Length: 259
Ligand SMILES: Nc1ncnc2c1ncn2[C@@H]1O[C@H](COP(=O)(O)OP(=O)(O)OP(=O)(O)O)[C@@H](O)[C@H]1O
Image 1 (spheres, rainbow, N blue to C red):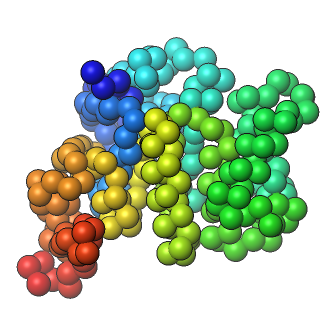
Image 2: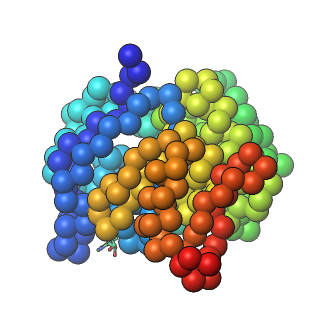
């Protein structure tokens, strides 16, 4: 039997006095990559943030069998690695120190980084190709370079679960491909990943897709399924068409629905 990654029941989240999510039920299996897609404002980030315990909610969220509310924070932080959308801050920290923040859940209070911490940071910075500028301040780096440092921070946690909201923001195509390879390798080692993506063609490389629309899960299914492609086209008002090109699923823009 496949292990459960996430079980959500009756998830309800209010923002600005409005119910943004109102009674979401969801089950995800472990050892897979799930991409979360949908129009602006649909509630994708809210879903990920509430599941990660970063927003107040009502209902039940269980990760790997743990009721998330009662899960000790340190254990949770070692298990769920979080990368938020448009993160800012830490601009005056060296890139190396930003990535080392990913090791906090493994470190004792005021302890020096261990050999394992240093190795994890170097490995993550090499994986996202930001090791050469480890001694530069985050604020001196370009948007894509900063994002690679933040990705390295998330990878340095060496958590079994990656939760990433818009991880490809500002990344050029080669680094987007490198990110795909990182996530695939993570899942190949038995890890799980849940990622919000606007790059639909890249999101179609995942194992499974959650299509979110107006605060509800409009569809959940394998990325290669025709039903998933129909749901995707519908949720974007027919403004994309999913086609197979050279063995890959690709989302083509449509100027007008039906073109
Ligand atoms: N801090 C906030 N205060 C009030 N309302 C908010 C807040 N953040 C988001 N919302 C609202 O919650 C709804 C869902 O927002 P959310 O960020 O989850 O959408 P999203 O699907 O991730 O969108 P996008 O694709 O634009 O990132 C939107 O209507 C948004 O306006």
